Image (cartoon, rainbow, N blue to C red; front, side, top):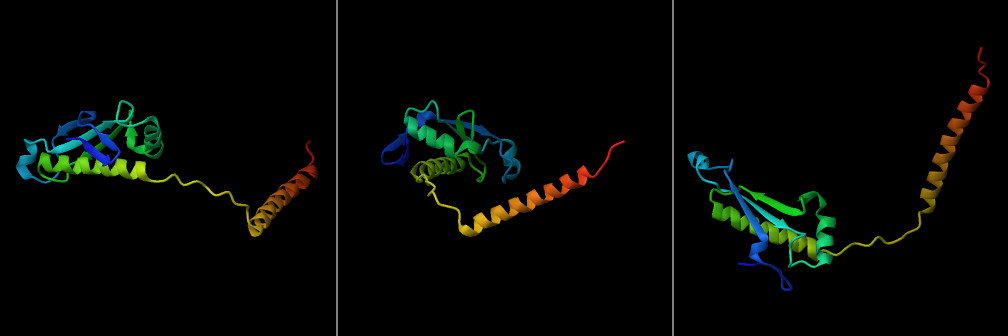
Length: 144
């Protein structure tokens, strides 16, 4: 079962790694014996499905969600491993789709407004005046 991100991008199932552990969620005594917590790992650098441009976009936009060049998603919402696996796959697909399909917003270059220019100059003048008053105070001070 390959992961269909969009019609041009399909990630092979063998590029996704799974880890399972005991969940801290609901389940009573069942929690102590079943490994229902799911962690899905997707290594961006080793992926053959992504082109270099897509890899750069992912590293740039998901910098805080990536560790050791891997996207890691942990799910322990449901009581069964199967349901948590489905949720983890959907989260990974959604994350990749939103990140890769979003347009890069280019900043429109604008000039500062007249009011902001005046405000900046006034604050500089006030600061300069403050320093000037300190300077005259020190000149009058005589050391022994």
